[in-house]
Length: 166
Image (cartoon, rainbow, N blue to C red; front, side):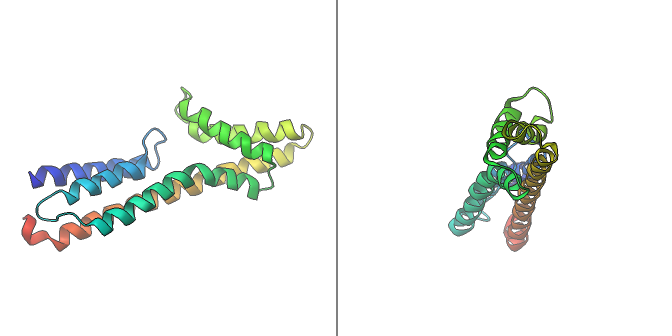
């Protein structure tokens, strides 16, 4: 049974890594479930501190995934219209039938929001939309980093308990 749990845990962590790039999969939460499954094995056992700390970072990165693109819009000179456009575009992009909707949505939302705010200043609108895209890339990188750390924790725990597992 331990081997099945460990294989499922590794599979979920690998899916979580892919999910940090694929908008339809919530990468860090899936990878965290993999760590949770690993902790149910008899050889490794529950480690409440590890699970609690990784859950905290999973929740934090899940919230930041929505906040960072809006902050990027603001950082690149966007108005509150651009920030609202980014957030609306992110939500619309999540449910859009096009594959890259979550990437295009915030960019287009920030662009449209800035053009509503000032329809003559195209340069500012494009700059704010670029900030939204940079924020999206930053959030994606952070999700990837967290899931890679989860993989490192998995490998470390396996290595630490290798005599009990194999």
